[in-house]
Length: 562
Image (cartoon, rainbow, N blue to C red; front, side, top):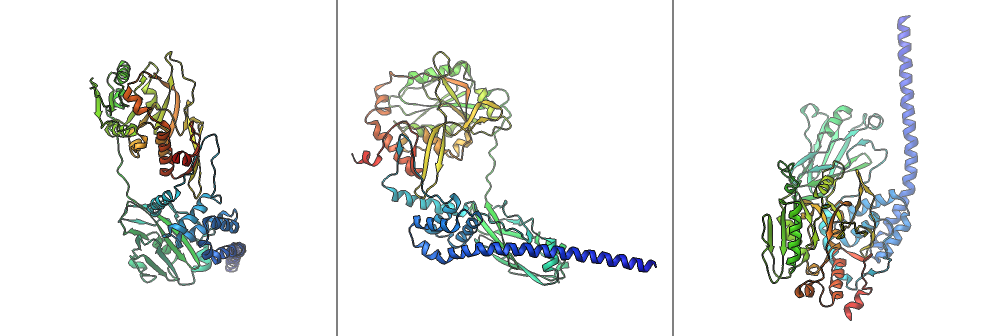
């Protein structure tokens, strides 16, 4: 009786397991049917693209964009899939592939306009800018962040991105494992292959197989750009996944930054693992052992002067009144040179009229402290010029800033009611960026309600030395007489900027400047100098047009020809 009862219980258990397996299989089939129906519909749209692909590439860019947008609509999945196809087929074809990729990356709209009171651009000489942009893009393509297409219902768990390896080193493609249900339904009773391919040919793939698994696993192309692992049906899921965990990618091409794609194929499935080949720079740590004692150990004050010695001496005196030990660096490209003496004052003599941004670059190159404070030579420190308040914001745990600006005060110590904060909005088009500069900010800085995050600020700011030194001030001659906005535009995406109203400096506007100063700073036709700044910046920053400036040279081409 006991034997019969045990047999009955075993039979019922087996029946339950069979029902669970059947239910899982039915669910999988239903999902697969739905997925196949979806992919069939989407595949037909992709097929239409592929059929007309050759014709598209022989048409004008605007026609290409219209045709692709019409076929894809707003389908983000199709956009991603098309991006993959284009990356594979046109990775070396900047003219066609990269342009079409930009359509997918930025969306369907490839046209933009600038609206406002004063609009600059487009320039007539656009062909040169486009040639220069192609040269720039060609250098960026190998290290550009790839578009990642992740399959749904994947039979393999894998890490699609975030894997980084030093050039000529190896890294495990960790995280790969076959799903248990997929194994039970499709793999455990059959021999099968898993192949790995370096799509960019920047490296090789290899794996070390334990001797105990030699009878279940064979390798083809181990240590080459294309490797295949053949598994016996008897390998077992645990052993299969242990082998996948040991697969390594070895970088074989030296470059400080490249983007590799490793294709993994199992049955009819393909997955792509993105590997960043990256030469990690050494950290630039600042010795803070002496910094706790005085802000003078953390900050250097820097300024540029030209033919205004009375003014700059007044600035030095005001700094020494409040900060007797802080180091002061002065770049001087005057014609009639005078020496600026004093303890902790370092004067750097430049060639005559070398320029505004050139002087700034020289100064930043000589800063030895973690931070520097930029001031104009006609500023005057007051009791409200508290450098400690700037440093406090840098060192707050949640601020993560690169540059913090203050405000100006009048001769009575009152805050000048003028907003210097500007935000930069950009819209992409095949003809370059359409940029709008407008007054405003991105909201308050966490923990400091008197501060706002923004893009462009005054000439009174403290910055992290290494952050600014990483890209610097453009020393082009067009920026020799005057420049400001251009530094912050070059810093977009590089600098985290904030503006605060709790640190001020007196801006003492000087009108009795020397004749040489007036000649070089404001003399002649200043519109021509402004025109040169605008046209150079449009070309350099790949702009179609921009607006939001306070001066007006509406038709740049007409101005140039007249």
